[in-house]
Length: 273
Image 1: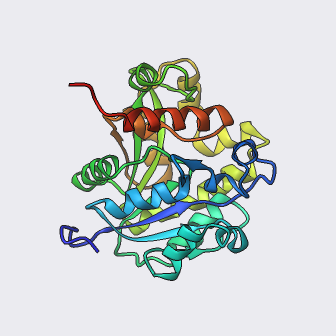
Image 2 (image 1 turned 90 degrees about the vertical axis):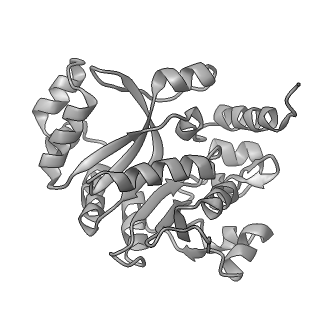
């Protein structure tokens, strides 16, 4: 534990299930699952766990997946579980079910930080900024976003999906803070969305037609979207706009993986005087 941890530290959940046996990143890296793909010689999932371990905001860490036989193939990752540095729990049949089951192992009095194993550029600085900002606002659920223009300027060769709002375009950062027990109920909606992923109109029905219509017309601001979603779900949802482009980088493709390796290698180079 950290000497500077707050009175109620975040419990962190790292989603690391392997749901595609033919994942292109795993195939390119010649590893058993994407989470184990190395970046600068360290599996991505271990980089995420290490960043969480260095954070001043995070206490217990829980790894959700990969399957135990795959976990045991990485000695460094397995040794952390054996030593009690972080816990491990089996993933369920979907991301939402996995998140819900993992949260059941964490006391409701404790805030939860949820992230993913492919967040290869995650750092303690990013984590502390997000968690610190999430604590200062009166929200049940807080999501991290980064301005798309910032991410594109930093990494023009990396494709990131844009969330287009009337005020600005944003990228998701795969960081979610569940500040209250009420926020955890979002996994039920998540499950509905997953079950209807082949029926987009039903998903729109879940979220509400009018805000989706405005979004498609480019007339919905981020704040209006958050307010409407909060009202729809019966909880207060807010966003932290991250000042770090790295916060929006995850590894969704082989190209992402190769670019992330280049980025990390470049960061390690000594700066010229």
